Structures are given as structure tokens and as C-alpha cells.
Image (cartoon, rainbow, N blue to C red; front, side, top):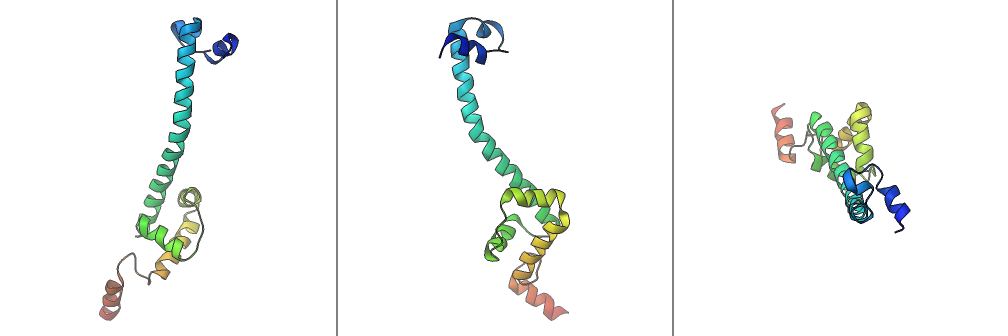
Length: 124
């Protein structure tokens, strides 16, 4: 890289890293490595955050995350995790409708097995 470009990228660095070309070059190269790495990590962290939000939302209605995702796949409801997390946070009624659809598909129980649902029906 040209000296001017290095100093432009090193703007805001502390000490000699902003005005000494050798130190600035090393710091800029390292900062670009960090930027590349963290762009990848950001995607993983966001997916993890979405899953946490979906889990919290689905557990409010008595359904585990894995059961919800499996049920949505079985029902061929194609909503990605980002949109599900947005629904869980901002549109609780819409999210509950999806959870209820999964529950209905699983036999109306709140995440229990079919035997538990049958036993509950006999007890009534």
C-alpha cells in the first residue's frame, strides 16, 4: 500500500502507529485482519442472538426451540430465524399464532408426547 493510504487508514491510532510508516503499516495490516475476522464473527453472534430470542419467546408458550423449529419445518412454514426473532420481540400475537400452529400439528399438547396428551384426554 502507498504511504498516504496507510496513514489514512491509521488515522485515529495512538502513539507512533499514526505517524511512523513502519509501525503504521503493521498496525493497519493487523487492523484489517481483525476487521476480516470480526465480519465473520458478527454473523455467528447475530444468529446466536436470534436463537436466544426465539427460545425465550417459544418457552413463554410452553414449546422448546427445537420443537418449534421442527414443527415449522414439518408444516413447511418457511420463516428464517431473523424474522422469527423479530416476531417474538415485536409481534407477540403473530409469533403465538406460529407457535399454536406447531402445537396443533403436534397433537394439541404443549410440547409433551402423544401418550401424555392421550392420558390427559382420558382423565377428562
